[in-house]
Length: 423
Image (cartoon, rainbow, N blue to C red; front, side, top):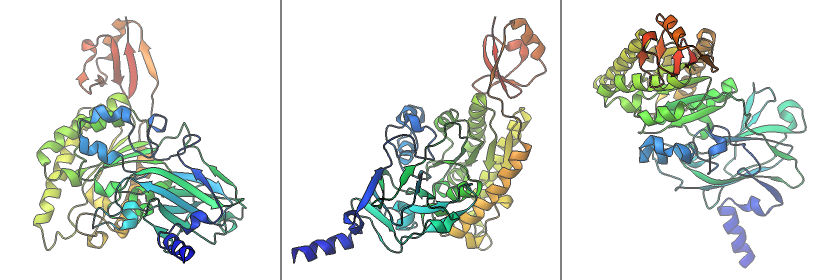
C-alpha cells in the first residue's frame, strides 16, 4: 500500500521522471549559458534579466522586481537523448494573471534548432508536466536524427514569461550525451524595451511571445526588457540600456504611456539622447498598435492616438536636432487587427505572430539603411583643432547639442563618432 501511495504521488506531481534513471545538468553551473541577458558575467542570480549592479540606476522598485522575472531567457544545449526532462524552481505561484495561461506565465518551452539557425521545430510535453516544487516538464520518444539526420540535436529551452526561476536543470536519459552552449562573447543582441506585450502577455506559452518568435526568425539573441505596466520611459532604464551595444534598440512603450501622453515627448527625447550619447546604435521608436475594437468603441482608441502623436513629435524633434540612426514604426506598419487580441489590450498568439512578422520586415529595412556603427574613440590632441568642428553635429555625453566653439576637454559624439578633445 505504501508503494502504491508513493507511485500515485509521483505520478500526480509530474515528477515520475526524476526517479527513472536520468542524468541532470544544472544550467547555473559551469559557465555563461543563459541567453537573453545583457550582462551574463555580472548576474549574481543566473536567471534574472538585470544584474544587481544596475539596480541603483532605476530608482523604481516595481521595475526592478519585474526585471527578476525570466521573460526572454533561454538555454541552448546539444544532446542525443531520446528523453529530455526539465525541473525548475519558480519564485512565485504558478498562476498570477487570469489573462495569461499557466504555461505562458510559468511554463518552459522546448524547440529543436538546426545547426545553421534557420529551422526550428517545437516539442510538446503532451500533458506530462507539473507545477509542484520543483516544477517539471517532460519530453518523451524523441528521435533526434529526424531533425537533420545527425546523432545529436541542438535544442532551445525558453524560461517563463511572467515568473522567476531560481534553479533550472535539464535531465537526459542515462548514457546520453549533453553539452550546454555558451553565449558568444561578441554577440550583438537586439534590445527590446516595452510593456506587457514585449514581456509576453498574452502568449499561450513562452515560445509564442513575439520577441521569442522574432529571435527564432532572425536567429538572434533578444534581450527582453518588457516590464508589464512599468514601461514608463524612466531615465534610469535608458541609462541601463546605454551600457549595451546591440544591433538595434527597440522602444515599444506606448501601450504603458497612453495614460500620460504629456510626458511622452520629453521622456523619449531624453531617453534617445542618453542612448546615443553612449553609442550610435540604431534606435527604433514604435507606435502603439491601437485599440482593436476602435470601430464600435472609438473612445478606446483616443488614448492610443494621442500617445502616438506625441511619439511622432519626439521623433521629429530628434531628427531636427541632428540625431541619426533613428527609425520609426507606425501603427499601420504593425498592422494588428481585432482578431489579433485576447482582451483588447494584449495580443493573442496570432497577434504575436503578426507582431514578429512586422518587426522582422522593419529590422531588415534598418539593416539596409542604418549608418555605419563606429564605437572607436578618436582623439584631437590639439584643442585648437576643435574650431574646425563648428559646422559639425556635436553632442556631449548628456545628449546636449553644443558647437565647436563651446568644446572644452572631454568626450563628445561628433557625426556618430566618439571624439576626445585634449590639450
